[in-house]
Image (cartoon, rainbow, N blue to C red):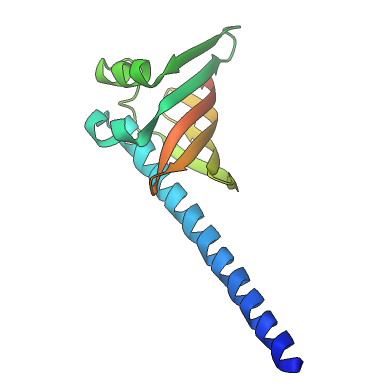
Length: 143
C-alpha cells in the first residue's frame, strides 16, 4: 500500500515540476520573442518580424487627448512600418507582467521613446511551436 502511495506522489511531484519548468520556459520564450519584435520595430527591420505577426493580427490605438481609436490589421501595420509612418525610434521597455491562458500569452508593458510614451497590452498565440503576435491594445501619449 505504501509503495503505491509513494509511487503516486513521485509521479504527481514529477508532473508538478514538469509543469513549472514548462511555465518558466514559456515565460522566458515569450519575453524573448516580445523583445525581439519591439527591437526590430524600433529599427524598422520589417523582414525580421513580418512572420512574427499572426495572420489575424489587429491593434487598437488610443492617442491621449484625441478622443478616437485607430485600428489596423497585419497588412496595414506592416505597410506603415515599410513606409516609415511608425517605428524607427528606439524605445525603453518596461515589462510589468507576462501571463498565460492556454495557448495565449499576454505581455503588459510600458514603452517610452524620446517623443512618445505607450501603455500597452500585447496578446500572443502559440502556434506551430512559436509565438505570434495577434492583438495589441495601446494607449499612446506625446511627451
